[in-house]
Amino acid sequence: MRATVMYAAGDVRIENVPDPEIVEPTDAVVRVTRACICGSGLWPYNSLERSESGVVMGHEAVGVVEAVGGDVRTVSVGDVVVMPFAFSDGTCIFCHDGLQTACVHGGFFGNAEVPGAQAEAVRVPLADGTLYVLPVAEDDALMPSLLTLSDVMGTGHHAAVAANVQRGETVAVVGDGAVGLCGVIAAKRLGAEQIIMLGRHADRIALAREFGATDVVSERGAEAVEKVHELTDGYGAHSVLECVGLDQSTQTAIEIARPGGAVGRVGVPQDEAMPASQPAFFHNITVSGGPAPVRAYIEELLPDVLDGRIEPGRVFDRVVGLDEVPDGYRAMNDRESIKVMVNPT
Ligand SMILES: [Zn+2]
Image (cartoon, rainbow, N blue to C red):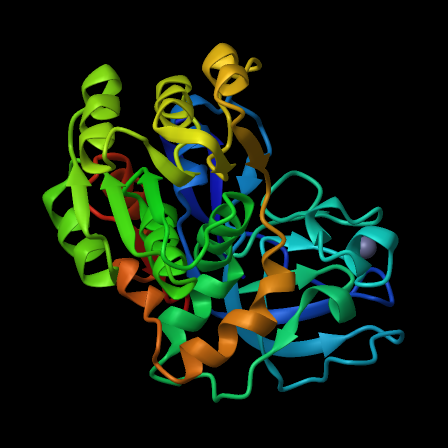
């Protein structure tokens, strides 16, 4: 089959690789009908060290189950399924707590051990715990929004949950990428009254406003902090969603939270140390978040997607076939595209 292989920073190729097969009796093989390129894939796109074997990329997908192992019980051949970016058994202590990204038998797609989903098909470990069967046909018009349940919508929601978003309160979202935009949807869905988007790309800001952002701050650093305080009677935001992961964005997120407020981090930190330790301490800021257990959130978010109450699929502004995936990485890296959907067939 054909798949997306990244060999080094900037070196993305479409190649023939072995077809995925059932290896463990708990596996499923899924024919990928939709995948996408993730903002987190831009970190390796800019920094991956060259390897001989390369990595099959992609951790977000919707597809149709083609084969299941002998121990798979809840997923059948022909089911339309969403594949969260992490696989999980669904039975361990952390899965029971709704933290599937900490599953004791779990892991992530798109690495040397578990090839990714920017491909014609993908092997899914622990299929019963990982896959979620969708009540739609594979060509359903809602497919873009359903696809976001594999990562960005669940991750934006996790940022809002970790930041303790409450009805009627003030939320700030740091980062105008697909996750930040989904964070706006999540904040609005949870009843936030004022939603301040910190971002600087005109197309993304326009979409953020349609999703429910009430204010936009395009400044950075100290100027951004000042602007958010102006917009919040000098207090800062109750809840801040950090959707970037850089040192400066994290610093800003902590500095714009009001005393007693919370920061929900879902941007993958690019530094070992967390900045703004002193303002976090002196303002009693809760700093929470991490890899989103999107598998746990599908149950809650799916009805709103099916009813059209939320439309996270609008973050996709480009659809490509497999051949154009390398250019899709370039387009997202150049901020020419918010998020690229891949239609592998
Ligand atoms: Zn588990």
